[in-house]
Length: 356
Image (cartoon, rainbow, N blue to C red; front, side, top):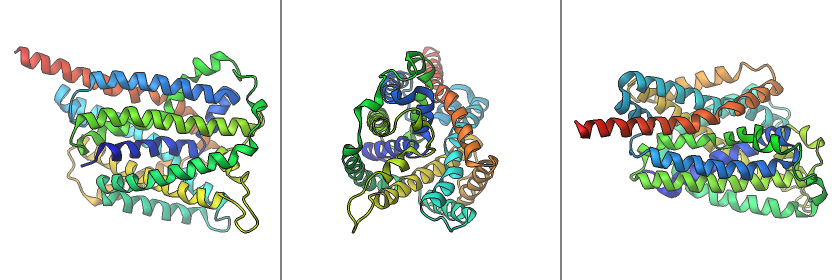
């Protein structure tokens, strides 16, 4: 069973991974260098929305089993398919983008498809080990990654220029607070909790881990966006596909140890592998639970092949990024509304049953 700490570290890593790839650029395109304000705003909204989920969702069953209790087989399948689509949308961009980024920044002379095959194989091995094992690795790894992250931010301090964040409101309040509400998608991985709840021994773990992970993930996102906004002037900051990589390259320690980015990229790679592994394991469980398929390791391999095939559709990294921007605009809606809807239906069903 997963402890509260393990649940929290899994979700913090899931939220942080988005900020290590192209997501900061998505926010910069939307809000300019005022994206750091948008992150604070969306973190507050996410806490409030998860508070509503905590009130509505009062079962220790995962969301698919809860849907079956509330509405039977068809609701179970419907919720399962929606969940499968949401989680696949979260992870397919990673499967496409990660090999290209690794080839770009680390292995320029290595074939991209070879990197992709090794990456998928690593995810399959991680998923086969099981969610509890992945949770234990998160519990050990995330504090180490946190220390490296703090050192990274401190080393960037000499590069900061406070003038770069002006005007404070960037493109305008409408972009930050109205259109910028889609920034809630940075917390779309909170949907993992509604499947992982059946892997913990207390619903309190689920509720506390959700709130903590949103707050910690929001703080990490804020510092990454703020560091980027303080280091690169807008609109030039829109041009870098992977903002965190540009920040890494700014750090120079000495001739002997020329760049901090080697350590950061090592941590970054492990973080992404853990993210992909937990997603592959949970998506497989979603499919098995929705259609009452007997759990088997071959299901993990099959789902990995399906996700890889979907990720191959974009012809280029830029098109894959456009997909991510489109997904970002909408994915937060079902992520926060679905658990509330299923929780309320369960409560209504229980009240009718008790009343009868």
